[in-house]
Image (cartoon, rainbow over all chains, first blue to last red):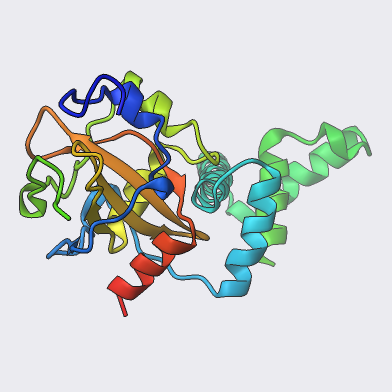
Length: 137
Length: 105
């Protein structure tokens, strides 16, 4: 040990040691209570083949499996929240117009269709609605 | 063989916030095998084991399974006795995987 065996290593020095090179103590300690409260951690099990497939994708993206799952769930939540917000805006506009949501959407689509055939010109809300409808069948 | 020269009192660890992480050790955590701080909490949440590293008196090793891997996290004493200070996250080798598997057999 550099500096003599009585010198305590600094954090930076210890951080350079690969623990795989250390001989583990024979005594193993465990938490008495499962740490389930931690930061909303949820123990979710996946089939081994699912984990293997995710691991392959995550490795290619230089992510851990956990990080990849978190990213995908965040993206899914964002899409879901944006779709919900679009639906709420359309429902509110339909109510203000004294129409049912279905009638309001039909009128909106007909109006857009009469303006142009170019689908790309649809409003953002209509795009969200179309995606939501296609997702929910 | 003896445990590290500081007490690891698992019952005192703050179950909601067990790790002391700042800019200094966060940099160490991100150095190996593209693991990151989030993996600490995944590891702690899923039945970790703790072993001493007898030849390094300032280190405990937390070994745990995270999705797709088993990792070793060296721990130092933190300023707050209800926390520990992680200084790295490493993919466990075959020997440590066996230690972990045997502990839960």
